[in-house]
Length: 609
Image 1 (cartoon, helix red, strand yellow):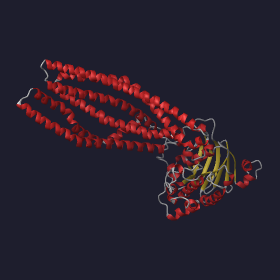
Image 2 (image 1 turned 60 degrees about the horizontal axis):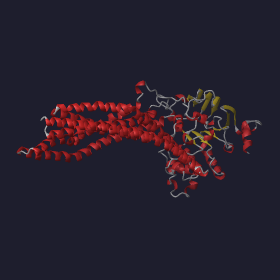
Image 3 (image 1 turned 90 degrees about the vertical axis):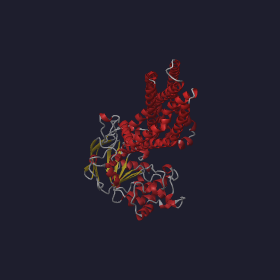
Image 4 (image 1 turned 45 degrees about the vertical axis):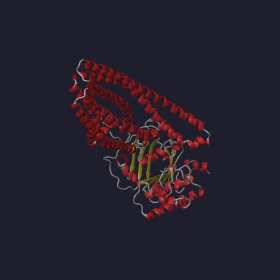
């Protein structure tokens, strides 16, 4: 399995293995938990119940002008048409009430928006936290099978879409529903015959929603898939810019990305088309109902049932009803987008490819003794071709072991088993006499350090990269590591010394400087088990010699595994293990193996001489 971010050299990875499902310990998901993400949202919403209650309270208060305005304007209009002494007092009184209702909307709307925003933003933050936690639990096989751009799209775009859908539901949807109920209640009390038009609008709203829902969901799903794919391709393009520039392939990259953008453009147009058709159909339908209600109200006025002021009142309320129903229908496309985003997040939160450490034996110390007993491993998509085949080896505490072999020999797979990324398909791998499948691997990994060939740095300072994950470094130990790793040799050349920021993936440093920082990070951890993959391959000969001298101190008293292609780096190893197509073909000290005239190690050495 290829390690994410090239922790193990890509040339040692079988690309056909990408996407396999490892035999890792997984959490079981019962049938009642098949909508885990949806239940997750419900829990998050329930946790913010007081935000919703207070938002609802202030919404009712701030929305009161909309409900009361038609009711208060009707007698004012009648008083204007038929002036009376009582009419003047009605106009003054209702005018003052309306003014006060409108003025209070400013503070109450602000308070309502604050509670709504606090609840929605909290859900957004918590959902992203859940995703980040799950990313840290998912197996490396899962990460290898998913483009990182696609995963970033889920945590950024999809979570934003879920938050927006909740906001629409609680603001526009819920608010429109309250408006609809309030207007219907007032109209039923004032003139029951007007209720017929309110009742007729609801079935039409349901019919329109059912007619468009499936098509909207289909187009949203296709659009989301295209966007996720484009996110992955975009990240690949950015990482390949030095290669494409060096080979004058800029036009090819632009052409490839343009095809992706055209696909998104086409899917986006389909989404926009169906959304707008849905909106215009709803608008036209309810405008026809509005005209019908106006004609009916005027007919009642001709027969003396309604006054002119009441006609205006009912048209105001029916207009509010149409606006509320239209807003509810507009929530449907937004909820469709939210549903698709939720389905995307479900892919992460419901994945079973996770490491679990519950109920595993604690690892309080590590001596560094490893036993391989008939150990075999094959990837799930290649069961007929073992990557490791019946290995029987014993590694003593403090022993330095070099693992060599051609690409695809199984070196990476063996290191992954030793780190605990994968359990054996058959046989047993023991750590200090204990089956590693029974151990809490998270605790075990606190005792190991990895120095990869492709150095992984984050965009912090040199100090932060060296002390990554370590909080109790003494000044004496830090200074000693700077000296032993030869990081101190180049600090004077940097603008801010140890506090110099290295840039994304260490882009501001040379390959040799990045690798020395990786070695310093391993020294800082003071590990019991050390895994080194061509740790000096990016260094010049002079620096390599200095680093190898420092590495002598680093490997002392630690079980060390060195994956090597440059055999000059392993001549001081206690033992050499030679793998070929997953089989152990040779093992012994460098001196012992050199005595074998037709030995594998001697053959490799002669090829490099």
